Image (cartoon, rainbow, N blue to C red; front, side):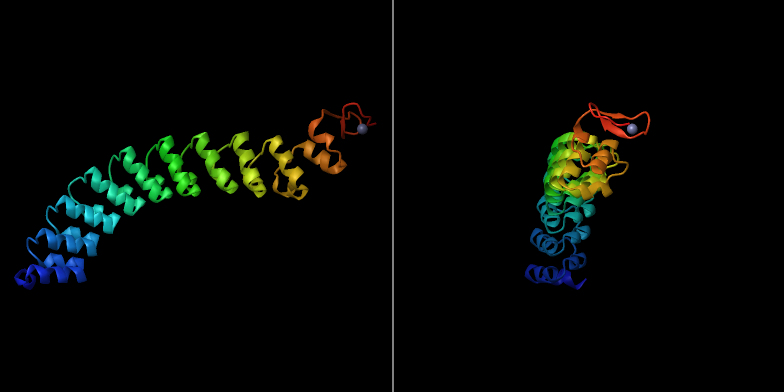
Amino acid sequence: MAYNKLTVQEQIKRVSENGFNIQYIDNPCLEVQLSAVKRDGCAIEYIKDPYLEVQIAAVKQNGFSIIQIKSPPCLEVQLASVKQHGWAIQYIDNTCLEVQLAAVKENGLSIRFINNPCLEVQLESIKENYNSIEYIKNPFLEVQLAAVGQDGFVIQYIENPCLEVQEVAVQQNIDAIKCINNPFLEVQIYVIQQNKDKIKYINNPHPRISNYLNSGNERFLYERELRCRYCGQYYLEGEKCC
Ligand SMILES: [Zn+2]
């Protein structure tokens, strides 16, 4: 092609306008290679055995251009790639902790491409984006607490949340009670004490909650109650029914 006859300066000009023009140059020199991938990282596809420097420049311009690197990329290239775009981690095999951390720091949701992420990686992903919890199988308790502490509604992504997680979620946002199936009695009481109207968000409220709301007597929430054998109503121990 005609570009082979151009001077290096002219070749640089061509690839700086469009990185993919490098496909018209046989054996481009390092400078030309660098100019091409700095314009379009994916132009590395047309460079045979690119220098390490070129690989790094390519993934810095576009993290996904790591797909175009034929030889297994070294750690430095992997890191530069996921720092540009965390999701590029899906194209890297057997990533180490350092690469995983860099990926979730750039984009927490990239944890979806990591098998069995460790606690540290899980926590970093939540720090970057608490919605990441949706993509973590069996998140650690610490991770669950960190996520619902930022947005109570993400409790919907946690299977059978424990009492502590439920409490933190409704403290963060009382309406998170909507997202909890069978909330613990303690959580129901907390919510009702904040706002009685929230009973509409509780499926099968505990009888103590209904009795409190029907009678207005707060003692129903805490004290021992009995069921009347004659009329079936609940009453507090020490008080009379029928
Ligand atoms: Zn009775």
